[in-house]
Length: 247
Ligand SMILES: C[S@@+](CC[C@H](N)C(=O)[O-])C[C@H]1O[C@@H](n2cnc3c(N)ncnc32)[C@H](O)[C@@H]1O
Image (tube, rainbow, N blue to C red; front, side, top):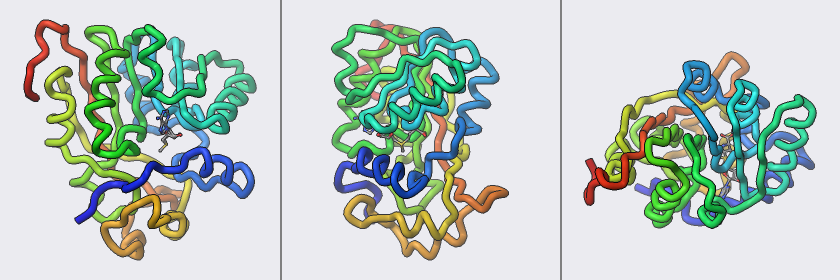
């Protein structure tokens, strides 16, 4: 059964269309994800934080509003401009950059913490080793990683990008990272089930089950889809203690 996107998702086009015709992006909830906010509020981020694939910037803005130094990158110019506008409007300082995350290693900057909110699962399976190498390069030893990713176990019938199983997370990250927890949590969306079903483009997303199953999706008080997602918290091991094979 297919579980992954076959092509890269056309994010810039989604953002441009969203600007013209409304909030098409289900992740555009107009504020931070509640799960990210909760981790921040209990001190889960520290030092210089990198938000990878920051989208419209709401998570980054929240972290910065709590006193953290935040850099936030996205490949979409439209999304980053939106984040910059919000930062200006709210008087919050975030170092927003339009860049392909994979170019960041060249900058030489090393971070104390990384937030990945729904970025990892947009990458094709074959880019996973490149991504884990990127994280190793971008992070200081002891850096904290908070990664939120659609889960294979928890969302069998949700149309969307790649879903990842807990063993896959352990295999991808276990060699370099001390995995503190992999826990089920929730990712809020801005769209009701019917709208999510309509936006599914078979050229972009593989669908594991008929989209009418979406009627059974969990929704919030506003009737918008809430997805099951993994939260992985991991700490980068010192180089000398990294293992050849996953833990
Ligand atoms: C599903 S959205 C999540 C946005 C945001 N983190 C959130 O939770 O609201 C994934 C984001 O990753 C960005 N992205 C995809 N590929 C990227 C890349 N190679 N480098 C930087 N950003 C990328 C997309 O433009 C998009 O904004």
